Image (cartoon, rainbow, N blue to C red; front, side, top):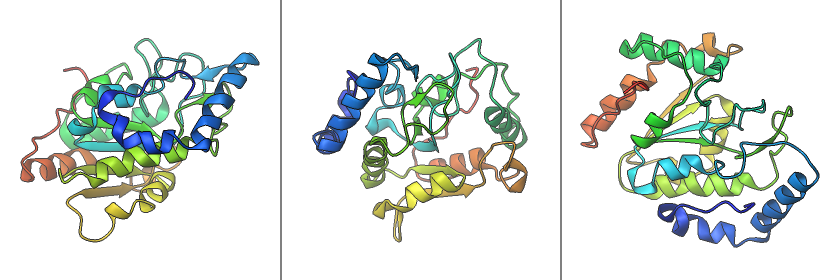
Length: 230
């Protein structure tokens, strides 16, 4: 995986898939792309940030994204998030709008969601890298099996967890996880993507944050503090 170190809490869940030829090919391919001078986002050292900030045994919520932002300085290893000082992207602007409508939390002027991650919100993209300026360019290169294993590891746990699936891509990914079907201790929240292209088709008004907290409180796991400023 191009010199990335798997956090301890995720190693047992990911070891089987990382031992496959596909995973080794992914690592070799990423190294070759970098050696060829291509810009790969996010940079080395932050590609597994979602797993680093949210240990497997601490996951309360999973939010699935598609792939990292492909502009310079945007991707930081957490889906929908950008580092401080980077303009808040349109999808995150809409997430903040729904957060304010749902829970009355005023939108911050930054897009770093590390606070969410540290509180148990796994902000996981399907592909964990992308070539600069080329959205979706690393899809189908082997990340799917690795991130599927992350989702499956959470779903196999008995701790009640909320899976927030925005858009058809995230929903299709979760549909491939058997543990999410039938009798399950988890809550799955589905809605359109927060992108400006689809947010008005049902994302706005879906109340994912209050629904998540109501479920977690009823399950005895404690609500998430969704205010990124705290």
